Amino acid sequence: MRMTRIPELLKLPARPAARILSLWYIGDVEIAITRLQMQGDDAGVIQFYRALRRVHDSLRAYAAVLNSSISKKQARALADIVRAARKSVHASTLLKFVQELPLDPDEREAAEKFTQDLRDDYAKTVEDALELPERFESLRNRWRKSLRSFKVRIDPDEIPTVEIFDAVALLAVTKAAGKLERALDQLTEVDDGDALSKATGATQRLLNVIEPVRSISAAFADSVRGLNQLESLLLEITAANAAITAASEAGQPQRVLELCELSRSRLFVDLQRMWLLDNHKWFFQRLYKAGDVTSPQAAARPDYQRAPARVASPLRAPSAV
Image (cartoon, rainbow, N blue to C red; front, side, top):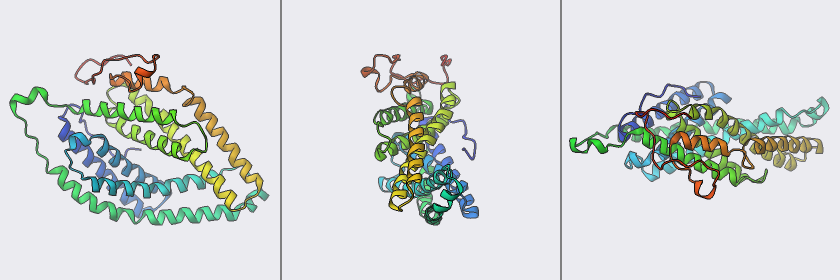
């Protein structure tokens, strides 16, 4: 959930617009840090992770126009912070998954120690998350200086060739959509942790790069709900896999393992029905059409509706999508 409203940037030159957006997202992290430090609850942990993820994804998506304002070393440091914050999100989802298993009172009592261990593990990840703001602060101070130091210098003779941010933002959406499509194509087994992780990350990346261009097309605005559902499914399946492993290692009754496996199977059936087995192709076709660029996989799939290899601008009349 956005904490502040993104300013209108689409019609600005790409270089300053990308910097404004990056600074805006850094401000969101600061808001999330305040919430995390004051309350330290589950919602605060998730808000902090999502804000960090937006900064991470925007810096990667718009790297070409940020002109190395962020060094590779700093980018790696941010990625490490994001991964550390993600542990709390996964621990929270795992605990919720186990707590919602349909156990009867006797079974619930038998599994209480197992559940308490998961609570303790989650509490430890929250404690670790509370140490992350200090690590982010050192990066933030450098980024604020480097991002704000950029000055736009435009030669009047070059004005017609200035790149507008809408083109860069739409290209970022198309690339992120292509990565998610490929990640879903590779997700064939319910217990493939690497494929699940890649698909989850690609979903979150696409959500974040769609945010600045939602006003261009209804296809972008409508896709957010579906992507949120996809992210939730992927996180729950990941939690189910973790629950099965943890329950097995803890020697839990067979009933607990059976319920975990049953819930995981139902979740994976939902994922297949909505997103796998070519059921998601219409979703990506609509995104590619809205971005007015050729699909990365169009050449390999004749069923795609081809589009000119160019990027649409909000200054032109929008096509019906």
